[in-house]
Length: 175
Length: 178
Image 1 (tube, rainbow over the protein chains, first blue to last red):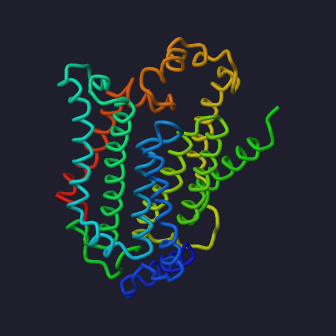
Image 2 (tube, rainbow over the protein chains, first blue to last red; image 1 turned 90 degrees about the vertical axis):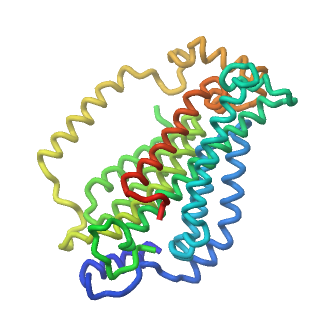
Image 3 (cartoon, rainbow over the protein chains, first blue to last red; image 1 turned 30 degrees about the horizontal axis):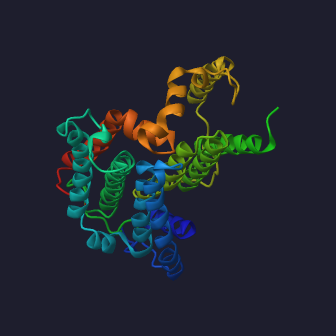
């Protein structure tokens, strides 16, 4: 991938303005690899997120790994189609849900008569552990949403539809 | 005496850091930076900090590299065939000074793994290690500290990440990441 991008990057430096080539390389090798690898990476990210209570990991690390799945899909299949699939509206809503979950968990225990994040007051067996895991999932959702959002934001700038002062570019962006 | 594996990793990390600084091609510098992050992540694991290592590998070597790649698509390669950037003497002096000042504090650090370190002797550490499982039912004390004992801090961090994303959208004058 890097060799192709490098070639294209150099090409753009030289023939900027007259080249209509997209920087997205539709490579069957990358697509096939991502198709095979993505489910495993996604599962690994979820594992890190859920299993942070008992081994290394947690919401932050798991959320970043889950978001890399989306980044991989965008590298393989193009940012535009990935963005059509995960609409940015849904992304923002997802991050809002994550923040609400974390806040609700913290304030909910106060509402039930305990301290902030005092999981014991919830009358469910072993809730401390489940509460911590819920908290981690909330963090993971926030982190993955923001990382994918940053990626989409940067990609939008690269494809020339970004700032108003930027004249429409001939190239389609890196991906 | 340093073991072979950490020594090799440290040499790799320093070499990658220098390569990142002096390589002229931005793409090459980004690749060197990703290798640097990966080396640091492995060092974290050797230093018994797998949580930090995971974060470094996922964020430093993974996501940051992709964001950088997206960014350099907007730049052009500087002309010329030189592989290395010509060094700016003033910048070099400043860099060497900073490294020197930071290195002068190394002597004050306790040896790695020493039982005499303030962290290992702290009562707070003992408290967490003794009570984490009874009080929170999780085996990873790091997670227990992050999500239970210091949960308020973590919630603040989550809100900071959220606010950063929202702030970015406000600055860009958009309602969605697109």
